[in-house]
Image (cartoon, rainbow, N blue to C red; front, side, top):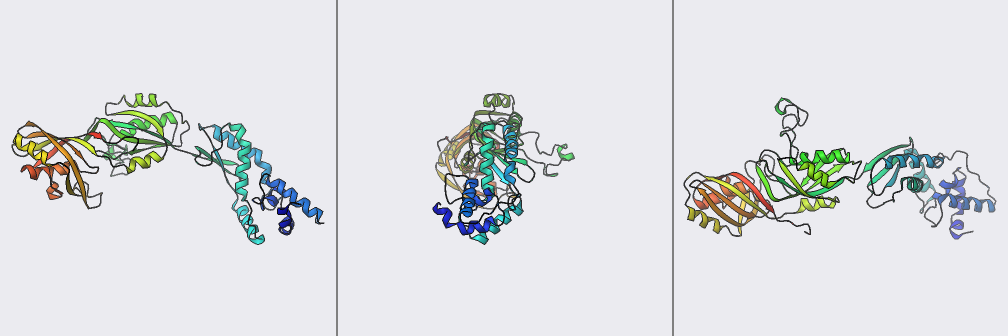
Length: 409
């Protein structure tokens, strides 16, 4: 008789007298010995009891599991059918058991002081996975599965938890009339009303929707989400190499979509452009959201008075690694905390267009409000370009020229 069997023979007798099947009896000691199934453990315990004069047979219907393990082939087929309906490199099986079974098991563990038992849910996961694996022909993945098939053992129904698809790249925004992301109508909150022509949106499309709707169709997903490395104002263009972003597709039936085709189709739009598309993991979203790269802008500026060319150039040169205090701009204070933020203007270059118009090219720390740096925003941004020039100025057009970020960051 094995040591673990002899050490637990008294507890095993009490459990056996409750009518447990071999699997459930063995599972009560499932972590005592490796290299065998719970059913084998149960048989060993029952044989040991018989040798000691206690021939205790299992009930025809196990009072704990209700002979649920007889349904393993059915569960495995249902899981295999569900997992095979979607594309994935791997899978994992999960189960939902009857709460009454879980409670009864917990009570038995407490009653007999079982320190090395295994939960029925764990055994079901493992045994269903072993049977379903050959039918699916994909490896099981415990750490980060692309598909989790959770079977409700009460009804043999499967609920699929499909890992989202993440596609990174860079986008350019050529239009000054579309936002980065889908913008629900302020009046109807997306339900549809006369103000939005029953579209539920403030704007007809967005950088997100142009590529997201196509990717959603290709992946046969449920919904798309857009994670940009910051965002530009609606009336600002994003040119140059573009802004890094991650497009997330939830519940994709197809994972191996053709990114070249996606890029080609999305770039048929004249409003935005997309490049360098590639698959990434969820971690990239966190990395992009946490990045704070410097940015280079070009601002077309209108002045209220005539501008002297040399004075313009001289003022621009004074803003070299200058720290400014920016209170939350009046245009966004309704949706952002009223705080004073310190930002650095790295450098500024100026080019006069006419007596009242000039361009500023400038590099700034992440989070700088460029329009307010130029205008002063009624004293909320100090120092500012208008005060330094001695003429009130306002940005009429703004372009983001560069996001200073490389993937190795």
